[in-house]
Length: 59
Image 1 (tube, rainbow, N blue to C red):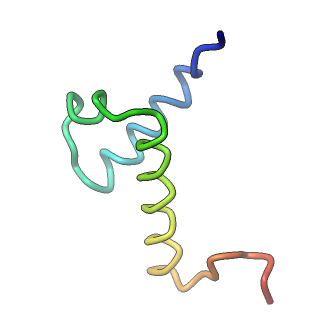
Image 2 (cartoon, rainbow, N blue to C red; image 1 turned 30 degrees about the vertical axis):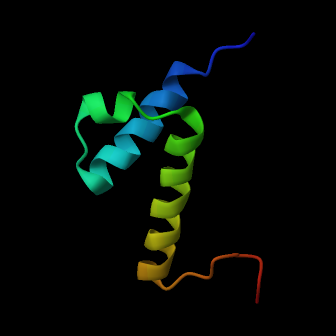
């Protein structure tokens, strides 16, 4: 069984903490799938606020 890369874990946690200001212990309790979902949702919010298309390949 492969472990999830520690660098990726810290990047995801920092991304969520930066945007939502959630404490470390709350972030550590998130399941991998839920943490990735929050990253996806935050990214979608950022794209909307930036006025970027949801799919950058759509013209």
